[in-house]
Image 1 (spheres, helix red, strand yellow):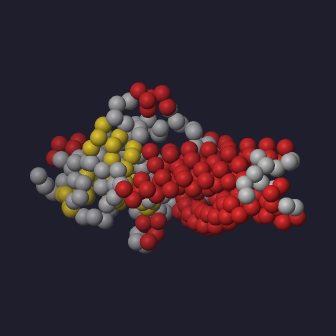
Image 2 (cartoon, rainbow, N blue to C red):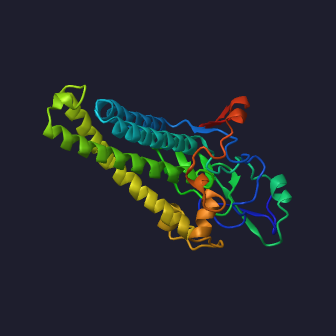
Image 3 (cartoon, rainbow, N blue to C red):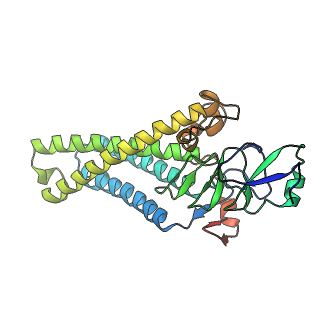
Length: 305
């Protein structure tokens, strides 16, 4: 199977040969055309908790603070703004979780496939011993997804998926919108406490004072925790994109063997095209009709549509 032109090495660490832009047989079609879901217990619990906490925050903001308010425009403007941000955050979460992050096809390390690459004499290709895949440049194996992922940044249990080449944009949007709604919730909570101290608590909310206070205290703790976490993650992701370096590459101190696309070039590569409102739109590229008409296939730790 091996020859001087086709040398196959079983290594876990990625090495250059195939570019991330090259299409391999079995790779997913364009963005938004394939649903991907990892069947990991811890990840599914974390994803459920994420939705529960966002919906809890929406409940407290809407029913405890805004609807009882006597100021119609205050309630309307803040209610619309908060719920729109919540929808964008949850949509970004879904797109991150259900988008193939850039998985390399399983079992493509065959003699026929290597022959089809038309390698030059002396070129070396590398095989992942865990999923029997030829590893493209900058790909790493994820032990949870059980696949090699192109430009893998890290595996995030809160989105039950790897953050990689195809879904990094949605993960950045998720962290940004969660940070925004956390900030909004904290501001509304502070204003609510300040207002209710000046009047009777019974006039400030439809809930009893102890219940309202407990709900708002928990919301403030949640908001502080989420704001800290997502703001740090958002900054880290933007820094990685602008330096064209994934978190794994940074931690391993890997020397770049690829042409770096830094700053705006990196941003345009991840978010697509010139700066526009589409950059912050998690619905962009979503083809719901195609997803609903596609048959589900199961296999391994994930199922794909």
